[in-house]
Length: 244
Image (cartoon, rainbow, N blue to C red):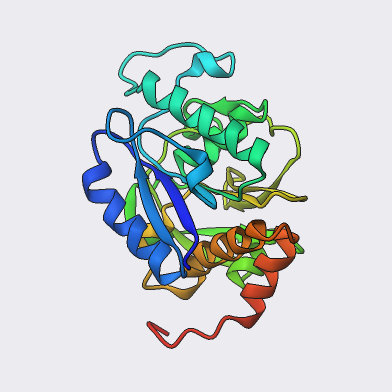
C-alpha cells in the first residue's frame, strides 16, 4: 500500500498547486492528501509523512520580526502548519518543506527569517518557475545524497529566507550570493526544506528524487526503521526510466 502524504497548500493557489504535488508524490510511490484551511480537518494519524507547501509569507510575529506593508499573510494557515509540524515531530513523521514550508520548518524549530532576503544578500533576483537559479549543495548532506548532485538549477518565487537556523538544522545549500536555499535535520525523523518548488520541476530527476526520499522515509517510519538510512538507500537505488 502506498504511504499517504499530507500536503498543505494555500487557500488562494491550492487548486492549481495540489495536482502538481499529488503527481510528484504519486511518481515517488506515495499518495497525497490535500490539507488547507477550511477544506479538510487535519488528522496526522491518517498519514505517513508531510509536505508543507509554498505560497503566502509567514507572519513575522512568529519569529520576532516586524509587520510590513504589502505583505500577503494567512494567519490561519500559519497556525495550521505550525500545528502540523509540531504534531509531525511528535509522531516522528518525515517532512519535506517547500519554499514557505522550508521557512516554516525553520521557524517552528526556533529559527528566524529575513523578511526581504534580497535586501541582505547580493543574490541574483530571479522570479520564475523555470530552473534558472544555480544553487551549490553542501558536501556530505542529506540533500546531496537525495538529489545525487552537488549543484542544481532551481526556480525561485520567494522573498523571505532563513536567517538564524532552528534547533537541530543545518544549511544544505546556498545560492551564489550566500542566501540559504536548503536546510535539513541530521538525525531522524527525516526533515528537508528547500527554498525552491520541486513540484514544478518533476521533469528533472534530481527534483523527483526529493519526493522519493520523503516516501522512502515514510515507508521506513511505518515499521520504525531509520528514516535517513532508508531515504539515502532509495537515492542510491533509484533507476528512473522517465525524463532522463
